[in-house]
Every structure is written in C-alpha cells, then in structure tokens.
Image (cartoon, rainbow, N blue to C red):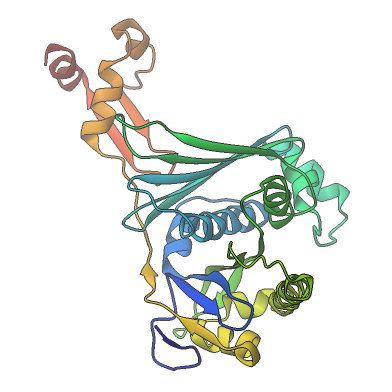
Length: 317
C-alpha cells in the first residue's frame, strides 16, 4: 500500500483499489483503454450504443472488484427500448467481453426525436423500462448469486445508485464515462472509466457526534468524487494515481496493488460444437447455408463453420 500521486504506474486496463484515510472509505478506479476499444471495435455499433456498452463494461469491472469470487461476474440490462439488451462480464482473471442487441429503426427514431441534442438521459430514451441484473457464477457446483433492480433514473450510474439505496449492506457511489480519445499514434480509440466509493461498515459509534462526523466525511468524499469529469475518467495522459491524488489528497488517499483487465472471449470451436450437439439434428439442418452451419459469437464476432462431415462427427461423438 502506497500513497497515491506517484507517477509511472500502469495507466490503462486496470482496476485500481484505493482507500481514503480520513473518512475510512474504500473505492476502485477503473481505467479501460485497449480492452474496451477491442470489444467495441469488433462490432459496428452506432455511437450511442457503443458508449453505453463501454460504460457497462467499466461498471462491471468496478462492481466485480468489490466481490470475492472465483468465476464470472456479469452485468445485464434488459428493457423495452431501442437497446433491448446489453451484457458485460469479467472473469476472476480479468478477461472482459460484452455485446449489445438493438433495434436499428427504433434507435434511429429515438435519436431523431432528440434533434441532435446530447442524450443526457440515455436509460429511459434508449433502454426503456426493464431491469439491471448482477450475477456471480462460480461454476456448476455452486449456487449463482443474482441481484436485480429496475432501470430507474437517467443514466446507468443512477440505476446502480438505486440498487445501492435498496441494499442495507452497501453504501456506495459511482461515476461512469465512455468516449473516444486520441491515442499517441494519432488514432482515435474508445476509452472508458469508472470511479466507485464504498463506505466501510463498523464506523458507527455510540457518540452521535462521531456518527455525524462520519456522515459528513462520507458526503464530502461523494462531493469530491462527483467533481471528477468524464474527460478526467478517460484521459490517457492522467494516470489513476494522479487522478486519485487530485480528488482526495486532502484526506489522505492510499492505493493498493491494481488488478489488470483485458479483452477476452471464452468462445471456442469446442464450446460451439457442444452447443450444436445439444440441439436436434433437424433443427440444425434448417440453419444450413451453402451446405454448412455458421455460428457467430455475439461477443467477439468470431465465426465457426461446420460442414456436413464435421456435423456428422459432432453427433457421432
């Protein structure tokens, strides 16, 4: 554990845990560079869709950092708006992936109705009414944990705050950002960031003055977190240490060892073959194009082609 403000630490594709000494708060700063650009660039998403999915990826990284699990943490939105579904997940090892499903015409209509103005409330306009689900899957021999909250508020951060308010065990705040930024080689790439604060349990005191002081510390830290701008959260020239020091140095901020993240899909030809084997052969036959079945991964857009002899091997195995 070291004081924040040092220079030279890895600035991208990390989840940086930290602690604010004076108020006794913990948090995580997420900075996504190549990882989010790889995920979003594999699909030809319209910019508003890509931006929301990038925020979802950063949110998944921030929330997963608050949990102890061995498996996959996933975040999913499902609503009746133009963006019907978004999914982002991250493994214990830091492999991230995500995709969005949307109605092109409904999205075009929603954007046209905005008359070119920025979508300050993308959740009701693009996601509509529905829910946000958090899932921890640690394998077939363990029970899955899931938390669900309705899509409430103008932004994804608002929805998460709604979930936090419903939880008696967690007081937390979060900031999200995603956008394009110029890289050192002159190219423009997607970047995303998240900043999350969590109030530690056990600060309650019989002395009301102490309790009031703790509440004041919490509110002050939330205000400082709220002063961070979207540009700061994704700025490639501003390291996580520098941003944390800029925001919280008056209360004393310390950082812990960061966790690396990367773009990584878990699809494989073997997994697709097992999926096909579980389906009736007559249904698979109806999916053939030019005497072959082509399966495309929704996450990474990789295509897997199976000819008639290869399909016969699958079913005869």
